Image (cartoon, rainbow, N blue to C red; front, side, top):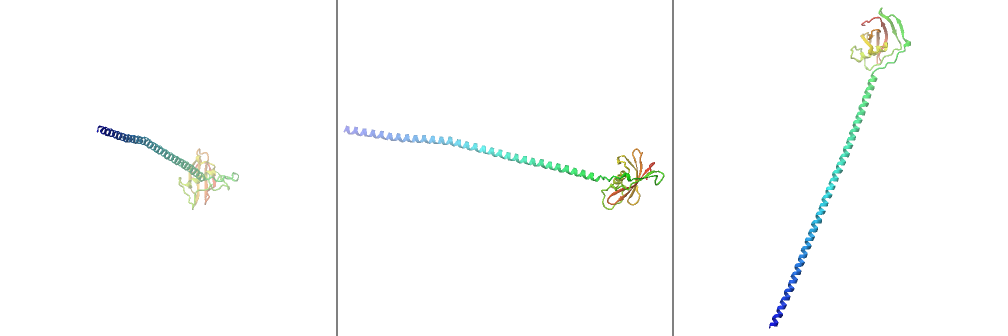
Length: 234
């Protein structure tokens, strides 16, 4: 009876030890699994975080590059616009210069340059229409001095008029006295589209009475010059 009890008791201990080994094995496996999971999650977090940081860095780099490209493009466009503005300014300056040159040319054209008379054809006669005339000069080669006026003509004796300026030019042409050295004592009507003027040099050493006629489309033409002894206001 004791033998049977001992045998049964050994079998129970053996079974307990077997169960404990199994339990320990399962626990060890579970512990191993937990450790593997911890390692896996740690690796995932670590390397995944690096990937995200790398992606963010890459995004930032691309964003900065895009901004640089935009700035570069804007700078190029700005430079092109500035270049266009400079060219436009240069063009406008050139056009202004050309306009001024054309205006100057037009003004120069307006200054009439009559054909010089042939002095060899002058006919000089002592005396003249009255006792104050020292000598009378006539020259068939005198020409109309030209004109800027158009249309039907009527003599105008307004000192601010074009007609007055052209009459003085005709008188200067006939006498050889420059207008800057001329005193006008009289300039008035001598018939339809005919005028007569009395002028002197500023030192009054030369005194002239000049007769001029209007030629349609060609301007005033001198017809006779009288050199006077003294000034007559006609």
